Image (cartoon, rainbow, N blue to C red):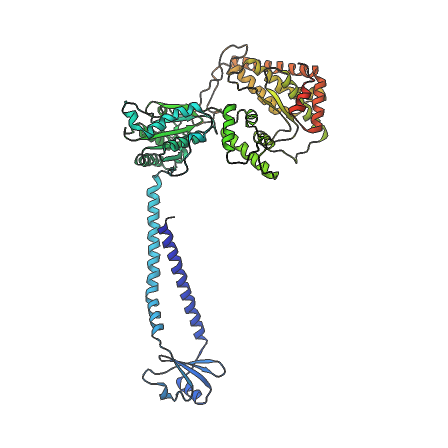
Length: 600
């Protein structure tokens, strides 16, 4: 709301209040005057002569008499006659004279001008509402992009890791700062840069860093904000956005979740009047029609580059694609330090150990880890965040909060203990698997217990032997249940799901089966329909049966190997399970001591 609108609204409120007060005052006076008895002037004269009247007040032709008993009476005299003509003199009674001019003038002014004033205010606000409605109708096609010029800038120092991405974007910053240097050599900077990566890796933060480093206005909008139910509104908002950006040039436009409007055209759904396609067409035209003097660079982010229209990715539009990966261990350490800058951290905290314990977490996840650690420290009334707070926050972030109210019966608790002990024993024995760092039977999230394994080093290529050993470790929990209790439970449902998925990917995607080095996971995917509804297998039913046979064979082989390993190391299985029943969680030195009893 502008200051002018606020002033008029406050003025109207004050005038309305004054008018209501005047109305109430007049009603009060009217009701008060209606209680006074009206008598003839001759009766008043008789009462004055009989000395029954204490005083009289003359207000024009109106005479108000106050009797000695406190009652009041009103009489009206003729205009041409005075009080002496009726025998009412100061010798008989106290006479007060009041001028009626002021009251009459105010009464006349209010009676004339107040109705017109109220009518004028009413018409003014009706016209104002009409103008507001017209402005809203006219601004329906205006952009809703938010401009961040003048706010606290974000720099590349606030973005940890992603060195190769920063190098790519530094060229954009240099062009925004010194465009003449590039044009002197005939160089053309990319008009659009597409940031591709999973959620939480820092795409939006990098876009803000580009604007912050260059010191230029930064327009931010989500692609879904372009599209409305009315055809043509999205295209109008795109035109308005680029018009504003060119006026503020040099500037950066950031479009988040580009796939909301950038999906492939020509699906046959919605026809040529489809609002999303019209919006996409306008984006293509605006990007390709840039004036060479318009220093406007478009950054966009998506985690679904596979569904984007090819016209978006051609030179002249988003002609540069920058891929953002999940951070490695060193980058995770830097990210943790950045998020802990403004928090009281204990000197004994080792961010390297925390980074090692968080493989696969994005920058947003790591920020949440530090925040959860601060909450846990505050809950424990500590003044600083300690290592145990960060460790506990990792478990809470990755697995969920402890379910302290979820109490298991003795039999179920033993089953969970042997189930997790089975995972731990096999995970320690097989050489290709990551080291087991923690085993617990404390319920977290949907899990009744968990076994945490962490890699010694980051891996980018995974051999077939590791996949096969992962299948064995996943099935080891159910194998332990079968071995100890001669029965199986539903506790291994998630293990079976993960094992089946790994086996299927080995056969259909990675070509790690007897079928041969063939990729069988290709699917034709419709843009609007879901992944399953709009896709189909591109291989025969005979080959599909062979795929199922290979998956079954891999799972069966892993199941047999898990049973053999646990039977061979039954003593170690009992030892770990009993210790879990006693302390609930095993990690660090106590866990290493138990593993030392196992003979590989």
